[in-house]
Image (cartoon, rainbow, N blue to C red; front, side, top):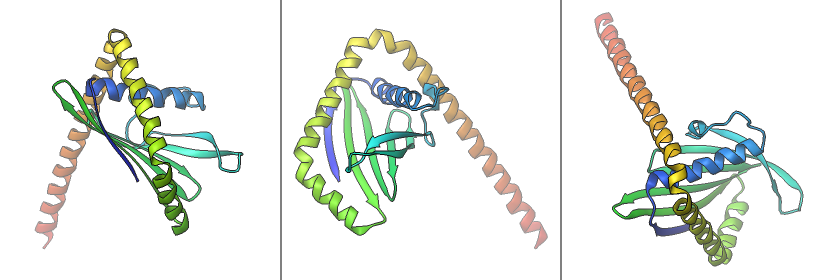
Length: 189
């Protein structure tokens, strides 16, 4: 497992916007022509090609497995019997965000798990440098384009609020239905 904690002087909605926008662009590049920013939530899936260790292209499944607005964004890349997770956990502070970036893998084959752990340990310093470079690029993009992306972020936040309202409504309906079923069951006894 690779873990990196870093403070970035940007807002949580700006950071999440860049992650989701990047995912949307990549999905469009790989054939999901109708992908819009609002689609990039838990359950969003697309497929892409990556170069395997043998130099050949490998088709992988990419899925946003968890999205909590302004708090968490988890992406799963599944190739064969191995799953690679990337997690961004975000905490908004007064002058920026505290970010916890985590990479993890899970495989059905024990030797692959052990190999990934060993390789992560060996290459951790280089991987952390690459991640820090990526995070600096995200920060730079946000600071340079803050005024351009402001309206897009507002629309993203409105869409997230709408989804949250719909989920809350469905949970409420589910609780009412469960109460009605329990009531019916008690009358039958």
